Length: 192
Image (cartoon, rainbow, N blue to C red):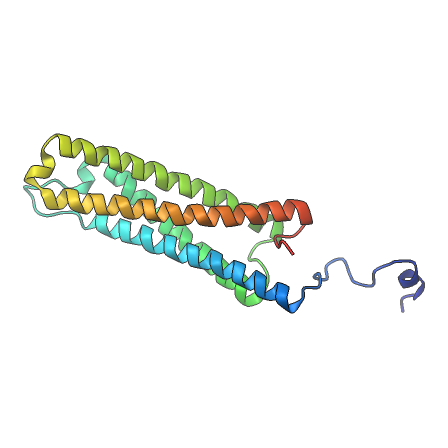
């Protein structure tokens, strides 16, 4: 039995691993914050998957250009596929965190993992989309798009969807960056 003396002298009876107290309002704010991250991840997944599908199906016939003939279009396809797979994993981790109230990895690792990977994959999408834009403009200047307009339109759509995926992954990166700052300041990923 513990002595009541520690409590009178300002001691704490909680164990070091016990969670901090959160009010009901704080719990709802945390849940909304985590749901917002999940929505941004779902949107980023949707756009990157759509971009991947549009680029993958961008073939017409043997006389027309194919996406795999161009390195930059292969880069757009691969970057969007990687981000779609990463987004699936992170959506699972977000659902785990929302449903269980705990992170998949230890908190310090989860905070830095989310932020670091969000940054890396956002820049990957941006560079792939920029390279794809440059190639699309080059194809339009070489009159390739005059002979095969559908190929160029579908490539433009895939690139635009990649930019949209980057935008939402960037929003997610801002939110996970906020969690990193909260972790550094408070010792917890929550700002409350």
